[in-house]
Image (cartoon, rainbow, N blue to C red):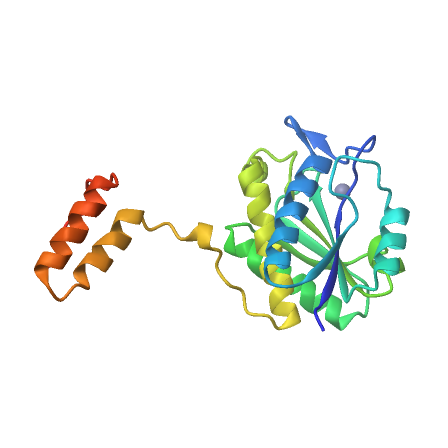
Length: 223
Ligand SMILES: [Zn+2]
């Protein structure tokens, strides 16, 4: 049976969350969550989201939605403020699985070059009231002059989402597969390989002609 994951993008609508340096936490959380969602869906996970647009979604409602979803785990995405520096994650006190999931989120956030303030237990409604193992991550401090630089663009916010998807997949025992769009080799290189596979040079030359006619002027026969 396919695994089910509940994702929450913290704040939203009339509640922007933390605001500083032209950044609104609710927008960061949503970009991170959407990237995480699409990575998980690509790996066959059923994902239930607290919101997929900029709308009101208080924590009590997130908890209700999470518990109604019947998901195996729940992760809530936030960005921090208060002049600290680095990633941190919260799990419910005594939940060993929560600690494991939080530590995987930390591992993959560090792979983005982010520093960590550590894994913490706190009496947060999201980790306390959810029926399943739940983790709340704070990716970076949007009010910190240098820490914000790791997440102040949409591409970086999405990178955090992909990192958390890797953490969730590892937690669930599913191997991460690179997406086709992340392969950066130029297309003409592909043609070089194909042309090099011909036994007859004249066949390779005929293919080269076709390839060049198609606009790949950089193609050549690798003999
Ligand atoms: Zn928040």
